[in-house]
Image 1 (cartoon, one colour):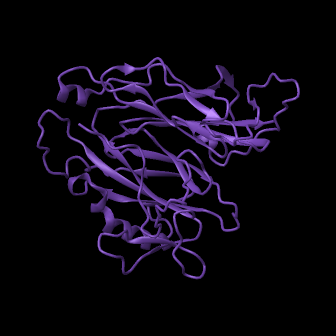
Image 2: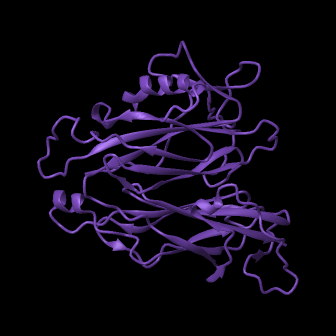
Image 3: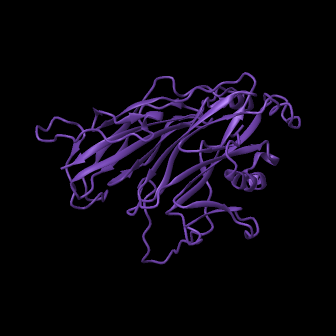
Length: 346
């Protein structure tokens, strides 16, 4: 059994990347545009007729933020053929058109949204070919973070997305200004999945005071300025003139503080492999400045379970001042938690 990742960002056809020798690309951990860093579903596994609470970890890293980012949730696609997101395109277009109708239950706005799963999501689907797998349903939730207006594209190219983000002049915006993605809620009658927990971050082996954790990070303001004068605050780091270059800057160890027991045994995978198999748990890092080396680290593997060492590296930027960093911990069955910290470059 292979579960989908907690979050999928759909590639936007309007964004064309050149691969010429002179081109440079942002690192995956850098947040300099509109970015969705994580989607948290509570519970990770849903129940028929139950409610799933969605929360989005969003950061707008654009230099010009005069046009605010609008967040839209678009539900209503259940058990598409093959459990593939492309089978939801018609439902997605219908949902975008329905955003003009206030009170539509499958539509939400803002960085949190609660959605009720249909009572018959399991019983209404065809029988599964694998008799050893518990019956289940899938509920696809699409989301858009758009610094403009989300609209239906009435004449999309073949196999292209039926929606786009447009500015006030009607021009389609590119990938710097919007994100379209989806997350899948797996629905079981009894099977559960605990959400992995992250409670903090260690930098150079020292626990860093956190700004916020999980839903508290939504719309969270920055805390008071960090005082680096006495040299005791672990959030204070020295600037590196090479501006995050991993070959020239000092290496700072980076490690999330993860709740013990976050990596659970995966009962479905264990049946199919006929041996005890764990869910995979990993951490993604994001930062407004500097460079994270090994920005994705495995905390628990399917065969070997929890690991003792999942340390990453951080290389400081050149310019003094604050920077924000996020550690997003995910498991392979849809659980997600995150923590945000602030560092001061001196």
